[in-house]
Each structure stands twice: as structure tokens, then as C-alpha cells.
Image (cartoon, rainbow, N blue to C red; front, side, top):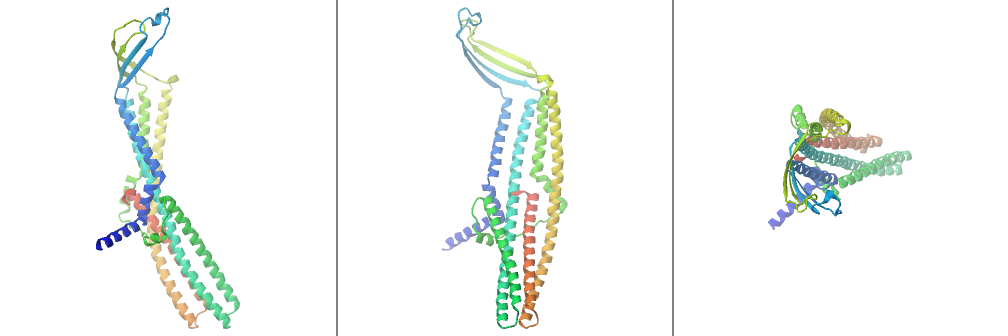
Amino acid sequence: MVFLLSSFCLSVNAKDDNYSLNGLIHKALNYHPSIKSSASLLSSAKKGLESAKWQYFPTPSVSISRVNATTTDLSYSGDDKVIKLGLNQTLWAGGRIDAGMEKAQAQLSIRKSILLVARRQLAFNVIRSYSAWYSSHLKRKAFSVSKQEHELLQKRIVRRIEQGLSPEIDLSLVSSRLLQVSANLNSAITQHQRALLQLEELVGESLNIDLLIESISTNYVVNGVKKVLLSQTLGIDPKLKELSERVKESHSTYKQVKSSLSPQLNLRVERQWGNHNIINADTENRIFLELSSSFGAGLSILSKIERAKLEEHSILLDLETQNKKTITEFESDWLSYQSLSKQNKLLGSALLAAQKIQQSWYRQFLAGRKQWQDVMNSIREVAQLKSQIADVVAESLSVSWRLMIRVKGVGAI
């Protein structure tokens, strides 16, 4: 029984953890097609690297030809069938093969970075949708309580009207306020449903609302010196890594194109059976040393070299722009995190004061020392504060988790 109970508790805890924010992010990373697509492209880049490695090995060739010529055709007076086997090995290519290898390695690194970018962006999307769901959940609770309080106040006003203590217009006023609260509640419910649908689309499965509520995540505490955290962010940012590798890829392309200015030296070994010019010819072995160059039509190779230089310079500028963008995004999230933390404390204190005022005024209303309008206004003020706190709490959670991923990466979740 103890074992079964322990197993049940562990299964419940594991299930609940799947509904926390980090659990939802893992669900999305394991399901989402964008991650699978990037992973497939990564496998393709690995094959490209294997192909580049094979360029260092000799290239085999096979040739079989059979001719049926007239007896007067002196060009084919020998054997009808000729077979050739050969191996072609590049001895020197001006750095073209090495550049191709470097390019393939850079492309593999680019695909790895693109996968990391996709994973990070997907995690950000989950965080954003979760934050929207959390905010709407808190607002729904706040406006549900406010609606109940307005309904109780409406019933009390009806009794006061029946007793001749309040005019009919009072009922119209409280009913109007009740309709406003109902509209706010309906809007919160709609936002809640929309955010839930977005979360389900990202994780690829239906979500249990009760388990989501039971497993609500809190802020990820971001500790450390700002300068150090920014340095860590720049060091692991996958978009910066992608552009850095694109610079290497572009430089390798430039080296490949430039190598065309140099001649290529090849060694070719060949064995031939038969000869179309000599009947019953003996088997022949040949070794060729070939030197060749190709400058393109009208020396177009020079234009290609200039183009490769310009492309590399363009990517370097993109890298510089992305570096500044990464710093700006980190600074923005850092300032938001600090500001939202302070704002949450201030609003929390304001809410406590407003709730005390609401309770005090309700007691004074029952004692006849306050008007019911005062009570109604205090109810609305508490609901509004709760709605503001819902936005601040949800946004603070979103910013803190986003900062954590910027500093530590998705793998730290």
C-alpha cells in the first residue's frame, strides 16, 4: 500500500510538473513542427559536411563503349568494345577543397544555431501565451468576485427600494455597474479561452485547466550583476552565433571563388581493355598529370570575387546590427523586470489599503454612516487594482523567464 501510494504521489507530481511553465515549454520543444524542420535541416547539413570530406579522396570512373562501324571506317578499325577504369586525384587546387570543407563546417554550425534560434523563439512564444493566460485567469477571478459583490449589493438595493429607503434610480445605477463588471468578466473569459487555445496549439495537445491552475509558475528569480549577465547573453545568443558562422561561410565562399584564379593539378590513373583503333589490343595502363585553369566567361571570376567580398561585408554589418539589437533587448527586459517588481509591490500595498477601506465602508454602510454608492465605488476600485496587478504579475513572470533564457539559454529550463 505504501509503495502504491508513493507511486501515485509521484505520478501526480510528474503530471503537475508537466503543466508548469517549464513543463509546457518542454512539451512544445518536443512537439512543434518548426523544431522538427530545423532538426531535419541540421541532419542535411551533416550530410553536406560528409560530402565535403570526400573531396579529399580520389574519384573513380568507369567507361564502357561499344561501336558498330562499317569496314571502311578507319577511325574504328580495331576492337568493338573498349573498357576504361580510372582514378582521378586532385593534388593541388589553390585551397578550393579546404575552403569547401570550411564552408560545410560553417553551414553545419549555422544549422545548429538556427535550431537554437527556433527553440528560443518557441520558448518565448510559450511564455507569452502562458503570461496572457495567467493574466486573464487572475482577471477572471477578480471580476467574478466583483460581480458577486455587485449582485449582493443589487439585492440589498432592491430591498431598500421595497422598504422605501432608496429611490428607483439607485437600482438603475447599480445595475449599470453590474453590466460593466459583467462585460469585463466576459472579456477576461474570452482572453482566457484565446490564450488557452494558443498554448494548446504550441504544445500540440489539449490542456486541463484545473492542472494549469494547480501548477501556476512564479517569477524566475534573476540574480547577478547586470554587466556580467549581459556578457553571458552576448556569449550564448544563438542569432549572433548564426551570423558569426555566416561570416565564416561567406569568407569560405570568397576563398573558393578566389581559388579559381589558381591552376588545378590532378593525377589520373587509367587502365584500358581494348582499343577502337587496334584489333585485339593489349591491356594498357596510363598515368596522367593534368594542369588546368578556368576563369569563367570573359574573366567573370573577377566579378564573382568582388561579389563574395561585398556579401561578406554585408553579413558583418548584419552581425553588428544584431549585436546592438541583443543589447537593447536585454536592457529593455532588465529595466522592465526592475520596474515591474517595484510596481507589483506598490500595487499590492494599494490593494491592501483599498480592501481595508472597502471592508470599513461596508461596515459603516450597515451602520448607516456611509452611502451605498461609497461601497459600490470601493468595490470597483478593488477590482480595478486586481486587474492592474494581474497585468503586472503576468508581465513580470514573462519578462523574468525571458531574461533567464537570454542569459542561460533554453537548455537551462
